[in-house]
Image (cartoon, rainbow, N blue to C red; front, side, top):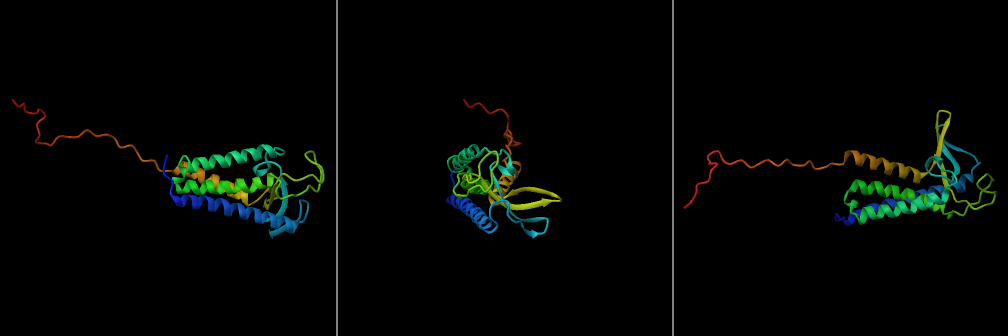
Length: 201
């Protein structure tokens, strides 16, 4: 187990708390401004990037719709595993790894908050998964990006933190420096030394 510098705790928890706070604040503000899904879209750059509210009952990019409980449980397990890896196994001795996992934890916490239903929203429409007026256990997304005529799945700050953290992990995995093994070279005797030691009587 490697010793973890005190500064790593500050780096990790600052990233996790500030990133999660930014995510929750922006989601709350945009949903109060634009309302529930089906409302207007506000364009920062017309037809390219803007704000549009949506609710995601799946994972990143809308995968696994309806599996909210599963993803919430996996989020808790992932957060606990990250804490163990960093501060028990000692991975926090690596600064880049600490930054990457702090970003991922911020994303996990921001979306977990929504999946647990803490925003206290109610569905304003019915579908196969819920009725109108049911409590919402879904992630609030609000960033809309258009790729030509195709809308990229709406996302939020938490999703961005998850993707950035995962990218840093990949970069770290391929660029982490490993100390090369030093070949053992047999010690050479001085040029004037005899190979045979004199026998003392």
